[in-house]
Image 1 (tube, rainbow, N blue to C red):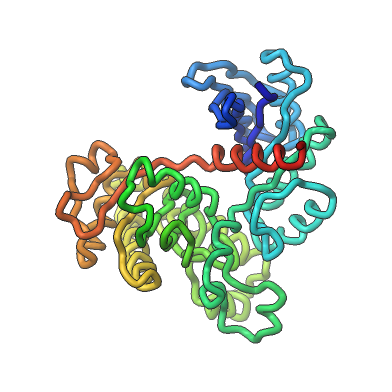
Image 2: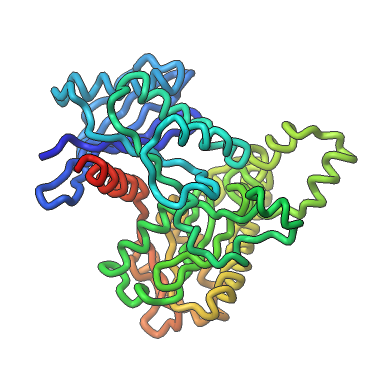
Length: 395
């Protein structure tokens, strides 16, 4: 068996990881997984085995992403007994711009290209890049692979990617990119087994979590995504505004005297469910709260999903299936039920019992649109891409 693949998903204060072994026939087997959280404050390493058994639960030294990666590397070297480490490391990279429509081996040129895209994904891209550099510091000879959240959406028609802006700006890359592509790619890969009737159909996938988006997919290909130039567009999210009239930005600049940094903080970190409720960005907290502002935040979230569902059905020219995924989509039966009620005009009829049991099918048999709950797994998609790319270059 070849050396395992490590998958890294780096956030601002955590580094999540999964290990995949390569089976004899080339498939991937899930191994240990975990995270270093509290990076820079109170870093803590948690590792679980393939079946959920606890393997590590300890404080570590990790003042930055380099320290977090070093802690992960050190733990595996000590407990797995494999000093050679990993055959390759795959990274989730939020933004690939126009240049990257498929996974690539990371070199200095690729790293420079990714750094140039930081203004388009300021919440994510810097941490993705920090993790790449941290790996290079502790394991410089291990090949690294970048897998992009934007790549899945490059199949969209040109008109779906275009803003009504002067052509010179479009030519410079000011266009709709779409995000959560690795999640959507995984959902499409599961359909033959989970929902075969959706394989060659017109479907909408709702990836609902702290970051939230929806995607219109026709026969496995992305046609439209609620996110656009950046990952702040579309649905209201945990702390992000979602769609916002650009005139609001002008108003904030001209009348509230806010500068660019203050506006960035507002639209990425102080808005969304947190901003409307004034209580929390966590849907679980809001659903449990009796506060009117919490209800209003939830109501707005559901309303916007319902509006986008209609828009995406129009882009598809019809709708055969709706699939919920992501942290909220997978665990908040109430939200799923309310979204289905918003979509009754499309012929959606919820099976309340199936929804309460988390599906997978949560619509009734006489529903014109079948509705499903399918857990996502971005890491296995990254692992597969990494394995394929390594095999291609190591032949």
